[in-house]
Length: 168
Image 1 (cartoon, helix red, strand yellow):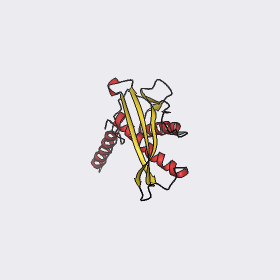
Image 2: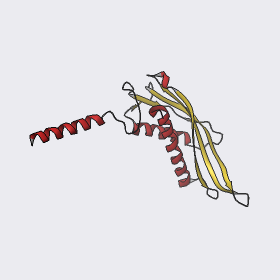
Image 3: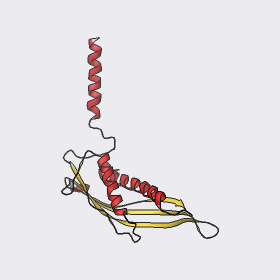
Image 4: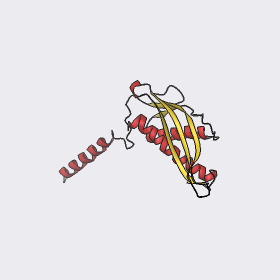
């Protein structure tokens, strides 16, 4: 009976220790990287949606807080994210027989500059874009707009995370 307890204890110990180095997010962050900062993403799109810049900056910050063990700092971060929103565009995607939009598409594009102060080879500048389709008769206001932006931000921020930390 004592042998079974020892074997079971060793199995549990090895399992727990083995999972300690595994990241469920897929991030490969060097052990000397402890902090990150997200600089304000200015809205430079031709069509300016008020609050879009603040909401995107917060969405990226929240994703990094939730998917890493890094500490958020206001300056001198080991990892630095900055950039600008370059496109906020609504366009028709399909038309009806009456030459009206049957479906519209909201497209958001963000230009991101990523700096890894511990390893400059990881630095990156890239554009990330995603869209949300909605009915042509609907107005992009209120809950419809909130849903659209939440879906777009979720996809863009996850793509940024994958490109900078997961290396996908």
